Length: 318
Image 1: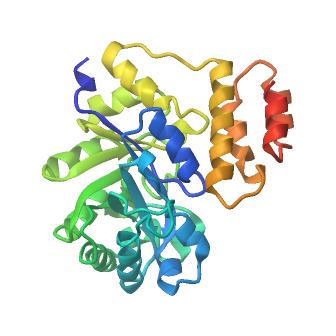
Image 2 (image 1 turned 90 degrees about the vertical axis):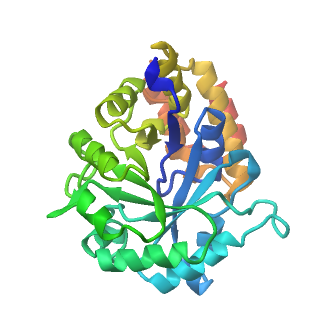
């Protein structure tokens, strides 16, 4: 199918989800580019937030990787960018200089929005402009941004015109407005207009892509050649392979229960290896996503939500 030519698939940045273990699993399943969780520019600026730096862990096996920063102070972004751009694995094998820096201008979470970060910055294009310039002037890495279709009376296309010339060369557009959150239809026409208005920029469509059929519809209705998959890969890292197979052949396979068990176990092992967690309590949400929509899934999920260690998980999966 012609839709399959030069299509790129990204694992979209998601707070609390796209850690190093999950990125590795998605990369193995066909993701072309993987994005980190949101990392606080302020946390990196003050150097007191060890958790912020831990979120910037990266290894060669997942490359290319983009680190996403959020905040509201250009000075914080400038220093955070220098820190991210200077990481290497000489001191710690789990840290390396990544391939891209992304600026979050689209997160609708109340906590982030109240701090004038994320999508709130779309209402303040002058400040957003200073932030993007602070990042682009302090790195030799490509700079991308993530936005929403709009917020209140501010359209995405007008916002992008305001911040043009600041050094960004790629934009991930979530096709819903701030007010719509994660419900409602994706505004295909708006993404299509952005692509037409900014022909020299890479436009990435995001939002509402849960199946290969959804992916094909987005490509056909927007004309974009790059999609960012978010909630559609929760418990289904196979989404990347399925989309690519469907665009090439018109067909795709769903994983068997045994395949799901194998990948879920591998994911859990990576979680214990690459995160500071000593148990699987924080991993349980992933297990819930992996084992939904199966006969007798409810009973298995109840057991999985009690799992604390790898041996317990192995016993349940047997």
